[in-house]
Length: 317
Ligand code: NAD
Ligand code: UDP
Ligand code: UDP
Image 1 (cartoon, helix red, strand yellow):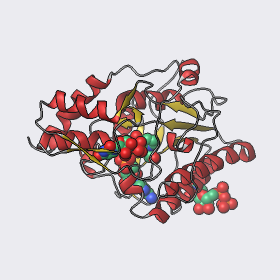
Image 2 (cartoon, rainbow, N blue to C red):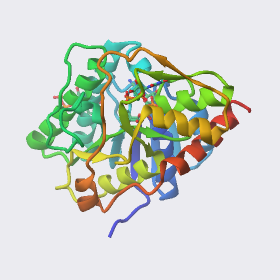
Image 3 (cartoon, helix red, strand yellow):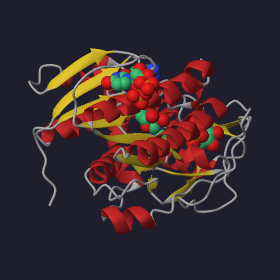
């Protein structure tokens, strides 16, 4: 039986897209939240409504520097996540994943906190196995434009498992697949936000390549539920564990769905495919189903509806 409430929980990257939803959900469960963010890609707007909450505290801090606080659980989400953001300063991206992990693991070791790592399906690279299972080691270019993110996250996983083996630290590693929802940055270049913003403004919808590459999109509320179940699972459930929605779509299908749901007059244009762009991506979530009794419940249409409403509001359309 899970017991919630009264735990001191650190959420790094808490002002970002996923982090802001996680903070809100943990507050609803009665927890005490310390949100740490350097506002590189996150914004105060995402958490403005939480700032007056008596159990919410915000600290501007960069996780590449040590942090001394007292907590019971740590969700380590700090890291730019969209390709344009993580490629803007690739050295800082690797530092955030690697030095950030070392500092947060050191903090967890000292405070005996359980620590959760927001890892990614990018650890599988451009996968040769489909769908991807957790025992697949991946197909990652170590020197390409995506490597700062992919290899940084892979090294962070290594550190988590070495702290687990060497220091007996309670760890939880989630490999997150493409997630979308309100609070995504409208200019972060990710496909769901790009297509919705383009459709709402009547601009061309930019499909990269032929649009036959696939992704599997998870609505943020489903993902956050998976995070909380994993964090509060027994200590032998370390992961890595895939969290994502197995419903797979081509990028062209997504474009057509967004155009239809927004009633937009935008048309699709084709632009070059970025280097190392994975061809197919779909999680195998059998492990999450078995160990966490978790699976997504929000369909792409339902999730897009809420996300479109959010972008309409912030674009004041
Ligand atoms: P996001 O960019 O909205 O959030 C990341 C947050 O981390 C931002 O608020 C940013 O300001 C903060 N941050 C970045 N560097 C930092 C640093 N050095 N110190 C402190 N804070 C820092 O991205 P998101 O989509 O919310 O992603 C959250 C986490 O989930 C990331 O670790 C990301 O790699 C992982 N993830 C996300 C997805 C997805 O589809 N959204 C998929 C796989 C993994
Ligand atoms: N650290 C931190 N907060 C703490 C404890 C440690 O930020 O409460 C950082 C510290 O900077 C250290 C890193 O975490 O370099 C790793 O800590 P650990 O104890 O594992 O190793 P060591 O101190 O021996 O380097
Ligand atoms: N993509 C696209 N048009 C856009 C943005 C992205 O066709 O305006 C494609 C991109 O090439 C990739 C997929 O959509 O194949 C998902 O891209 P995103 O940046 O959202 O995430 P990731 O590549 O990290 O899965």
